[in-house]
Length: 216
Image: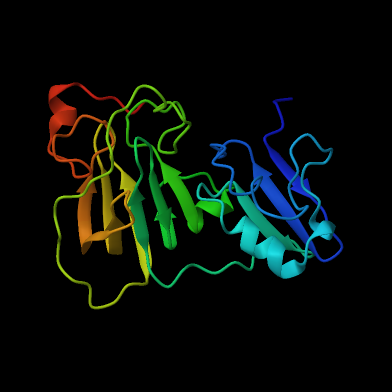
């Protein structure tokens, strides 16, 4: 039997699920005020020690989709944000929020339909997701130099296709934010670098071909 990777923490009104495969330890849960998550405690997550509203709000802070909450009948009731956004983080991954459809993502990772951290350094061993391999290895501050075209609407399904040995193709309404938080680019079709070597980051410039980037 393989190592357990998905953990369910039960409460009287709501359960919290943590997927270790997606967690990159940003700390939005552990640093939240209150007793929902306490490092070193067993179990570290105790839903009954926070209000129902706080449980939902804190879980929804998780940028990687590693945390979700479930009703007592097992349903996930979190809804997608009204705007699809992608943030190009400082020296780190792409953080996405919205109505996400990441092609070929495992069916047992429901959180990534709402929130996801995708590798953009090319080094993750858990592609297309970030696994923190960028730390100390990747140098990009998250600036965005292009503006795209203004969106007529901001919601709807955002399809993310990780091309084999190539970029991410995004299809659907999306706002790309620089690491500073500035809404920088808008549009509904874009190719984003995931080899880590484009000279026009975050956009793909074809460098993956010249460096022999491999996704497998």
